[in-house]
Amino acid sequence: MRLMQPLKLLAIALSLLVFPVSAAIEAYQFQSDEQEALFRELAAELRCPKCQNQNIADSDAALAQDLRAKVYEMVSEGQDKQAVVDYMVARYGHFVHYQPPSSAASVIIAGPILLILIAGFVVVWRVRAGRKLSQRSDIQVDDERVQKLLGEAIPSASSSTPAAADSPNTSANKEK
Image (cartoon, rainbow, N blue to C red; front, side):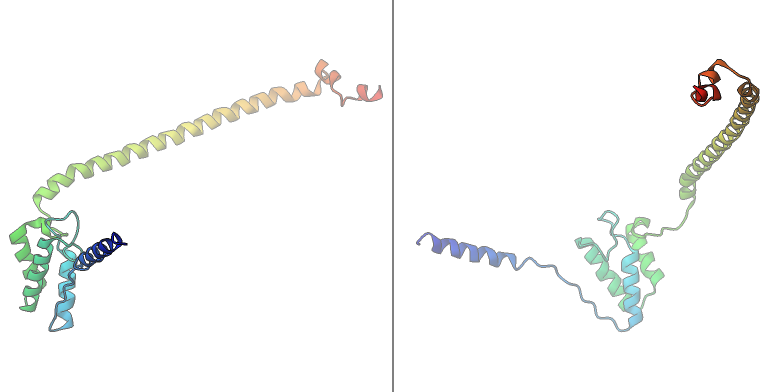
């Protein structure tokens, strides 16, 4: 009985420690619905520099919270989307934007990859076309062989052969 009292107190103390662990919900007050829509669009479009492939709206990182606060501040001041994106790109680089602008470097990187893909499609197309031609010629050769064999087999079937005499369906066997 004495042992149960301290265990109850310990259980109550541990359960109270669980309650402070809760996520902070950010609630932003906007002057208009357009500002709120712009904030949500920017939060979905800007990438968290710390997180792997998460936008600042979905990330729980402290840096993402700071970026959301900065976006809110700039949108509340009346700045447009391009001004906010330009500020973030100037501060964090093109990585922060999910849709970075095309540049000569991206063309240089993507060019050889596209050429390899196109060459691969051409090779596959040529190989498949060659197979179809070889299958057609094989079918023609097979058809000719079948016709030749059938041509030889038809006259020999009408003549009497020893195999035909042993057949159970011949008239000689029926008379017996």
